[in-house]
Amino acid sequence: MSTLTPLVGLSPEELGAALEGIGVAPKQASMRVRQLWNWVYVHGAKDFAGMSNLARDFRESAAAHFSLMRPEIVTEQISEDGTRKWLLRTAPGIEFETVYIPEEDRGTLCVSSQVGCTLTCRFCHTGTQKLVRNLTPFEIVGQIMVARDALNDWPSTAENRRITNVVMMGMGEPLYNFDNVKAALAIVADGDGLALSRRRITLSTAGVVPMIERAGAEIGSMLAISLHAARDEVRDVIVPINKKYPIRELMAACRSYPGLSNARRITFEYVMLKGVNDSNADAKALVKLIAGIPAKINLIPFNPWPGSPYECSDWDRIEEFADIVNRAGYASPVRTPRGRDIMAACGQLKSESVKERASARMAALRSEELSRMPH
Ligand code: SAH
Image 1: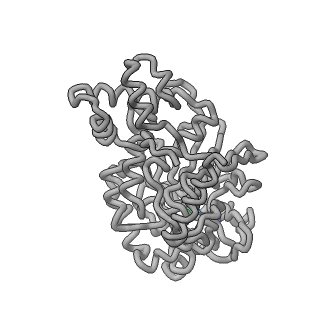
Image 2: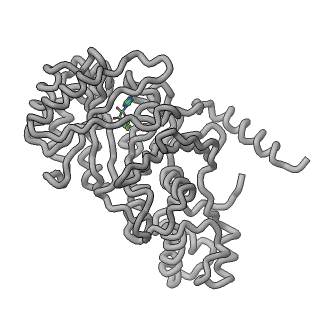
Image 3: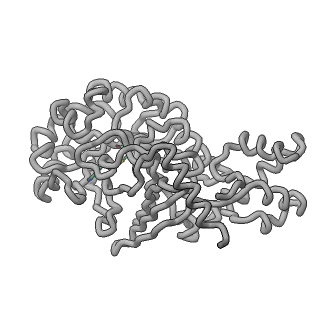
């Protein structure tokens, strides 16, 4: 394992402190931070040698202490519809997925926040993978760096960028990893950095009610709520966090989401499960529930996975449901399933990583180091 400190994911303050730590004079540090920041996040630099406007001494000492590495790509899969999925790895047993979804008018990167998940939503494949751990800012921002490298999507100042939107809708619950997600999204939204406007960043939560207001105030992205049912009896079963934070409390948090307006609506995600939540009565309950909230309803055809206990609603059913929501005045687009053939669609992500005892992890690390040593 390299002992160099990765720069990707550090805040400007952390980067400044790291530079002072290698002897950069405090007076010079903020200028150096700006220069490095520009190379890393505007140009996607992968080495220090090419940073032509920096003194050679500085480049050399930076290279001796820091790295511009990204998470390692374990596999890349490309769907017949152009969706791409990367399985990334940052340490033995720490593997997570990222998905790029190209569309006519935009390109969306779906980013993971945790390895595994604690929520156990009944229809979600990730929910069958126990939480291994939270991803760090390096690992979250690193997903975007990897995708932009692979898509040749530098510099950040280019007119036609391939990644125009980021959604925190990959593996994990972002509001259970608040600090790291906040730190990572600050870099994504930084105008001198990856430079995606906060309106093009969406954080999706299954409903960690006490964190929703903070998310609005401190992260300021768009909000999506994985609602999936308008009645507690149903939601308790399919989204078990509902037993802790029932629908009424969730709706109250939505109504007071900072910055909510017609121009900044909440997206309610609603997975269409045959015979479970897809009746006309369910649709009517849904519009009643969200009455008065500037919102759009994203209907997601259920994406199956091996052993999944549900079926997707029939197309006619989805259309009738969408009509009811639509007639009540809410946009109700049906999300086209993308990347199903490579298990990259909503709710299909999962990695083989399992939580190991620390001792087993150390042993794996040591044997990996040994195997890298010259024989
Ligand atoms: N934990 C967060 C982030 C994950 S977002 C959240 O729950 O919002 C992933 C989205 O895909 C969520 O809306 C989730 O409910 C939905 N989803 C999960 N499994 C699915 C499946 N099999 N088919 C369609 N959508 C699914």
